[in-house]
Amino acid sequence: MDLQAQLKAAIGQAITTIYGETVSDITLQPTKKEFEGLYTFVTFPLTKALRKSPVEIGQTIGQWLQENTDVVSRFNVVQGFLNLSVADSVWTDLLTALRTEAPAPAHRGSVMVEFSSPNTNKPLHLGHLRNNFLGESVSRILEANGFDVVRACIVNDRGIHICKSMLAYQKFGQLPNGTWETPESAGLKGDHLIGKYYVLFDKAYKAQIEQLVAEGMDKEKAEKQAPLILEAQAMLRRWEQGDAETVALWKQMNEWVYAGFDATYRKIGTHFDKTYYESQTYLLGKEVVEEGLQKGVFYRKDDGSVWIDLTAEGLDQKLVLRSDGTSVYITQDLGTTDLKFNDFGNDRSIWVVGNEQDYHFQVLFSIMRRLGRPYAEGCYHLSYGMVDLPSGKMKSREGTVVDADDLVSTVTEAARTAADEATKGKVDEFTADEQATLFQMVGLGALKYFLLKVDAQKRMLFNPAESVDVHGHTGPFIQYTYARTRSIMRKAAEQGLAVPAELPAVSFHPTEQQLLFLLSQYTQRVAEAGDDYAPSYIAQYAYELAKTFNQFYADVSILNEPDARILIVRLALTDLVGQTIKKAMGLLGIEVPEKM
Image (cartoon, rainbow, N blue to C red; front, side, top):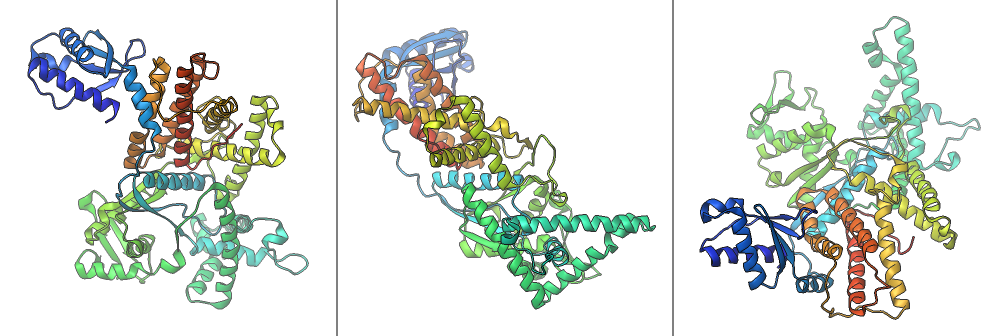
């Protein structure tokens, strides 16, 4: 039974014993810092039933708890607020219990988390990083809560945007010596090379539009009639018809991109159990549309197009098949969703996709419910806001997108600079390889933490320099705190100090009590983060724990404590803090260094 539960049970027993009343809903809140105590019980709601003043009720209950339980050591009453201090023996028992490895959570079912979803016409960018970090962290949090998790990715590897890069490569990819540019000859990762051609297409396309407008054509018409866009559309038709030359170019360029993606995924710690490709799934939804027509879920208009009326759900009428029989985006999602469920039969399915697709997923889930899919109620869109930099919004077509690889390099270098300033050259004690590993770990930790600490639904501004501050609400601050706990434990071992399984009874400093209370909250915080798919809860918890440990480190002596019993307890507390920080940061996909 946790500490709150013990106190609630004791208060309930006190009310029953003293007043003969049963209170089913006993609520505790943290005691305000200006008053002594850990938890506060508000007595105002009891005044009517007990016909006593709030102060008298508080005094009577507090006295009973102090005299009749082993939980409460002291109390004070401020108006109708009963502030309770917890007995030292309870803290000792709690620390002992927390040091015991918790049993694995009960199995709660299976979940598919779909995230990343890149396009093969450009490299991963800052927005993809937030997506990947959210998807990976949510997967880890759900696993910690007893779920079997399948990490899935659907790659957008077909369509007009892919053909734009392909066409630009055909037109601009031949080198002066007659060979064709490759990632090796360009000295670029494959995804960067293809992204280069996507930008080249856009520049050439815009130039054609400007030329047509200058010749007197309306801009909207020029956008549709520019030779490049007509050629790209013709290339898409050839691809859909299976033209050998077009398909061969598509395969080659995709291979380059996938090699580039894989390198980035390895660097940022992302992996997938299953990857779906739009080129293999985009036709599946037509069968679902036919099924829906037979069930009366969809209806066909006079022009042959197929629609669904979702106005009853507060949505709109939605096209699911064009009059010429071709798919729209929702069509292929219908088929892919069925495919995913048939492949894995998950109880839940989570899509990590930006909030510009909120309406799309409302429509998708409504259609699945109308079709009677058994998994429909388990579908969830984890919507997240866009990420901006101080320089403004990202635009990949114009080549101003914030590349994921470049950003990881930037924060790694920022971590090196920050470490030099914060440690005054102590990093020189590390070998070159150790420094490279450390700065990569700290830089990536800074990036992940900064993007995960904010509520996913909020749009956010990412500042690389701010993210690596070892004194702020940052990943490096928490990593540094972990390293501090390890340093203390190493020094203790050098002095021949070890923490026994059975801890001595001691008096706990108020900061130690706060630290123990936070440690006792870990399992609950992980459960809440799993319920709400919210890595930000874990990020906030890790920061609170690190901040409280540093206060503890400042308030009391650890290795220089003269009382051997207190010293042992503080070492046990320090070790447990380190272990818990490591677990919490692990749920965010962040590694922590043994020394900094």
